[in-house]
Structure formats: structure tokens, C-alpha cells
Image (cartoon, rainbow, N blue to C red):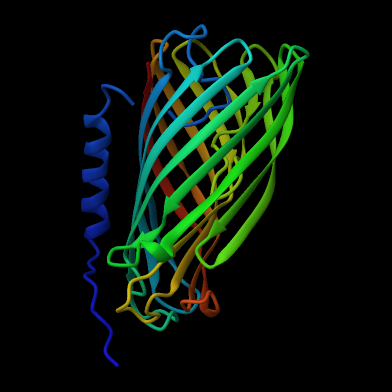
Length: 319
């Protein structure tokens, strides 16, 4: 049997990286990841609490244990709105689109020199958050995504589930809680706990969740330092796992691909007033692995990935 040949080339990732960076800068007029703060907007009944963000991310080439190497270009786009209904209740809605371009090169141990390439992940999510008089906060955030390679079945690429969390304002400087994410993913269920933290340790030092928990994993932790109103610096990490349905012409027709990694990053943030910010990331992805499964989720091949340098940028704003 002859598999479809996918286009490759050492310069492709760099060309895509440049175009994604240009896209992010083009939308600087309104574009925010979760940084541990309430984004619900102003007083009840006023404003829609709109936030927009664009994040291009590049995972540099690293070696696969079984031979060959891999680099990945990613861009994450997010638009969300959160509105306070009253002093206790707020509702939110978010739309997202993630794009990943996997560039395999050389001879791999994954049944093909290029087992998958372009991955699309459109999604929609909701949020219901409630705060009690004694400082307790509870929220539930359902989400639906389609995670698929170009040409793969939409019906068979559905991912859905929710994140539930409960926390309490123990002190004006400390909010602490727990959460759990439960998702029905492509041929596999996922259940994970996470710690919800927003701790203003000092006037300038804070420990908080750098990401939102979701189908790709928990929210992680980041320690940040704010020397003034314009700048912030942080060190953080958050485990990520991506699963997606494959097309019908690769080494595993209608199968499943998976990529997992543990990114550790430093972040430098420049704030432009209260509404806009630019976050630059640099770091490395540890404990990387890629897996190839058949259409029922049975593992066919798996290969570990060497440590990979990372670079990223987020342009964000809220209204």
C-alpha cells in the first residue's frame, strides 16, 4: 500500500512562523490568556467584558529517539466575553481556533516519515461563575472542540467536557482552591485535578495559574515579578497533551495522533495601559512524546522527543 506523500521542507516551519507572527501583530488593535486575574469586566449590567488574544508559538527541531526529528508551528486564537449578571453571578462565552503544523523530517519509527501534518482545533466554551458572601467562588466551564487533521472526519473528531472549580478568598492577598477537568476526547477519556491559585505574595511577587484548564490539560503554575506598572516577568510550566483525528490516507487511516510535552518557560510582559499587553515567551519542552494509534485508539507506535527550545508571543486586549 502506498501512503499519500505530504509536503515537507526545512524552511516551511520558519516561513509559517514569520506569517503567524505577522498575523498576531496585525490584530494588536484588540487582542488575553488567563493570568490569574478576574476578567469579568465592570459593574453588573455594564459592558460585555470582551477579550481577544493571538498566540503564535514555535517548537524548534528536536530529535526523535527512533530516528528523524520534529518541529511544530502553532497559533492559538481566542475571543471571549464575560458579563456580570449581578454581584454574585457572571456568565461567559468563548470561541477559539488552534492551528498546528507538524514538520517531521528524516526516517521516523512512526510507520511513515510524515505520519501527520496540519491540525485544526476550533472550539466553543461557556462559563458560569458564582461568588458567595463569605468569599467562596465556584465555576463550571463546558467546552466543545473538533480536533482533526486536514481532511479527517468532523464527526469522529469531537472532544467535549467541562472544567469545575471551587476556591475561597482566604485573605485579601490569597485565593486558593481546587478543580477538576473531565473530557471525552478522541478515543480516550481524560480526568485530571488541578490547583487553583492566585497568591499575591508581596506587592510585586505573585503565584498564579498561567493558563486556563481545558482539554489539553491543567492550568499550571507561574511565579511572576512586577517591578512597575508597565513590566512583568514570570517563570512557569503547564503539562500539555494534544489528541486529534487523522485523515484516511496516512499510515493509520482514520487513526489518532497524540503529542504531549511539559513546557517550562520564562515570560516578559509589556503592558500598554489597562487594556492591552504583549507577552513574549522563551523556554524548552521537556518529556515530549508523539504517539500513533489506530481508529479505535489502540497504540501502534510511540516515540520520545528530545528537549526542544520554544519561542512564543501573545498579543491581547480586553474591552
